[in-house]
Length: 481
Image 1: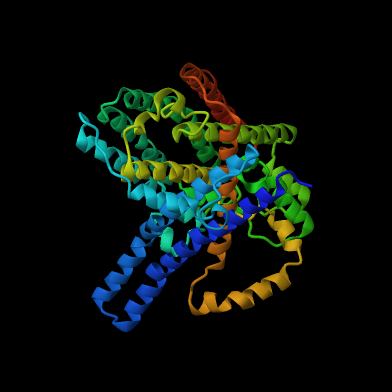
Image 2: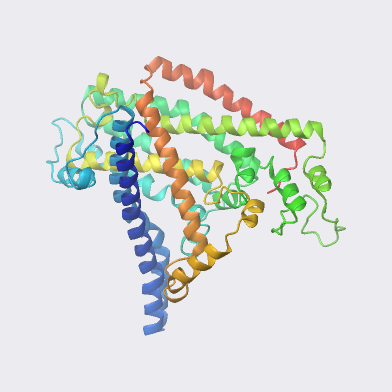
């Protein structure tokens, strides 16, 4: 029998309940604002003003959906963390409010909102109030380009797609540390000031390997557009960046050719927009495809293995830097309850403390989403296309099509491509969240000198080496975009 099986079952039930409680309202609000209301406006009175209002509603859909998503998701993630930590340490988590503690964090949120909001004597009231707002703002606006990537570039979210989306996300991610320094200084508390200064030092140290890891992935993909990076990883796990940024796409394409599976052809080096260039015949056999993708034979195979190894190193560098950026254990030196009471947010209470708390868990979700898009194929199904086409899925597809037909064709409530992309994104993102919680329940906190040494003497050199190795290794492997 599995140890602690009842608690595992309860945790799975809580996860299923809250994921439905999060994404059903978000889906319905997005549909109502972006599809239903514009359709009613345009059909009821097809004037210029109504058309402009409908377009405005469609443009506001991403922000409205994020505003609905953030508070509900934060309540779930707090409960998810508390119950998971209880499971890891073989004890009971919160289990009083609602069925087995299902509504505990909702009750905590209501209680926190009604707490007295106190500004300490001697504090800079304006900066003290502005700090949580600046800390929270990037959670709303910073990750908007990810919406297009995780919804399979749905028409309602195409407005958030930027050609340099990853740089926009990284720029927005650098703002919260300014808010932490503001919070620490304006509180007129020595513990808070030390926490703010630690946050600044930590951000400077760990942003370098984090950014280098993502820049290396962009180099593999040949794009800064997160939608294009996600789309390039279509076709199953062999095409994901974690599998070498394209190093295994030749093997994937060769297997498709061997099995005679009909798929959309990938872009090849011979394809060009120049009409005067002589076309080259596409490879038709397993050996021809392998030679096309790995032109230097044994050297190309070695380089493909190196790219795969480097991709795992890059994922590890990104996750480590991301944990440090959002102050998760073992990098929670800016808070460090055993040393600094609660660090930068020691003097905060009520709604201001709630905003800090909300932003911390939202940032954990965002960094997990970035990892999903950049390394794990975004909303792509992990099963390779050639294997998926061999599965007897036709009866299931027909049954699902019959059930969902009124919602797809009549109400336009469900877009099948977006639905399945969102399903896989949710699964992958919350897997990363689970890993972060497992790390919190496993590892002790660094000392400040260990934190600095680990960042500057280990992660920064390793990220530079990985970048240079990828630059040279990918030349020997034809990585298709």
